[in-house]
Image (cartoon, rainbow, N blue to C red; front, side, top):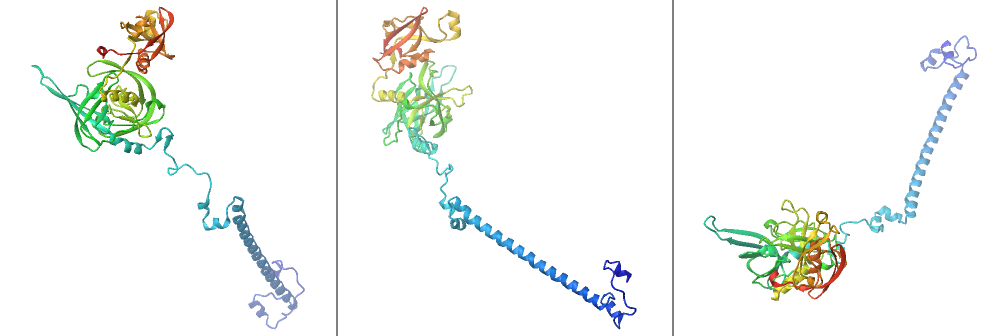
Length: 440
């Protein structure tokens, strides 16, 4: 009895002296306390009531889980149906995967949608397309000459390689004068690999242009562009035979225009090339005489020279404008003399050091060192020592600037110059003349 009391069951009514059952051990077999019959019934009723409560609690929890699951499904359906509609998408299309086909968002640039155009005047920017159109019109020019031996040295053969551009279908080719200058044998290799002998038709050292001829018709002449419409930054493609590697294509941009550079010929005679196109398209020895083309696969220049301390390309190359090359080539092919505008002055560039040494009124310009008798310059009153500082309103900072301004004119045109004479600023008009033949 003490054992049950300690379990917190409480004090029950007084137990009888004898067990209520005839076999008191029976209750012990089932673990029942020796309570009275009434207490025994109350005890079992409490246990049954607890089981019923647990059952009811279990049913309630199941209902909560079921309701929550149904609510979640309904919420998901609402999101699936309502949210797409807010963005103008058909929910059915979203489920069936049709949305991707009907998207109208602003497209991101892709290779398939990019238009390969630099501008309406420059043509396609795809270098491979340009190369495909141009390379059939570019040739390799191999030259050789034999030096005469003497009692000390044996004769030797000198060889060189350059490039050329097919100008007409009947075999006229434009190249540089310095490529064929002094050559005794000229071999032209076409893009097809065919080799043909060529002869010099005529040359113009002053513009570094030469025309050679091969005996073949049906050739693919290059398309001629207009070098007066060029802009800095536009795409250009150079094609030629650098270091003898025929049909080499390189690309770049026009870096600058109207460059004037002094160049020495193979005979040692110095000349000024004017109005040159500067490009960063790689040009190397052997490219001379080849084509510089624009985005429309049109010839805009004849590659002529590079500025380099190493002898190889450093991204500073120069080409003769095609308008100059065409004017010279047309005159040579027609058997006419190439016109060279002239006013009859020779001079040198004014520098800061020269200005300081001679106490000149300006630190840049073209100083006249001699005036040819009977020339336009003499008739206009120019004298040795005068310093020309502008021509037709454009600054003249060097003698090359003056030469370039004169060469842009035609024979018979007028050119106005501003100059200093003994510190006094003056102006004069001169008529462009044809350069005398004995000066060529």
